[in-house]
Image (cartoon, rainbow, N blue to C red; front, top):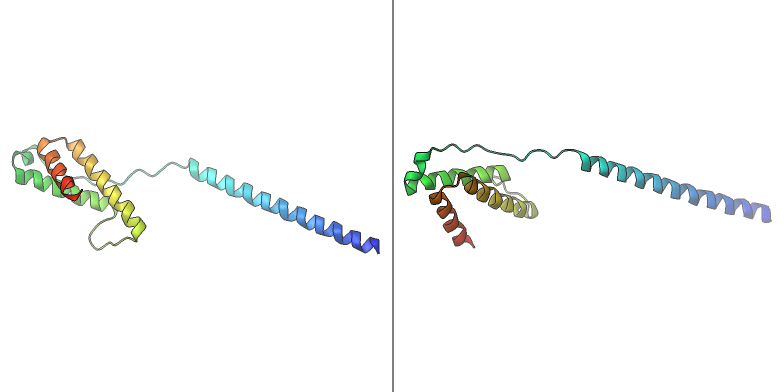
Length: 126
């Protein structure tokens, strides 16, 4: 009776070895897939052009109009457009995107009246 028992033990050992090799192969393929994805170039960030003129900053109303346009563009780029309600975790990321995009836009325009409008608006929120 030792012969059938040893066949059983050998078969079980072979099955375990095959299962282990299969698990190792699947893990290797998964790691290969991750490294390929990591090496793919990132898509460029979305952008929206905002048109304004230097004369817009001669009055507070003109600067406020440019600030409104920048806010609208930042909302659009970050997925906070009217009628769009993202799920909670996506909304938190979109609001952070909006805040960063608006700050970057105000910094790039670099007009004192616009900067003070933005500072006042963020002071009121915070």
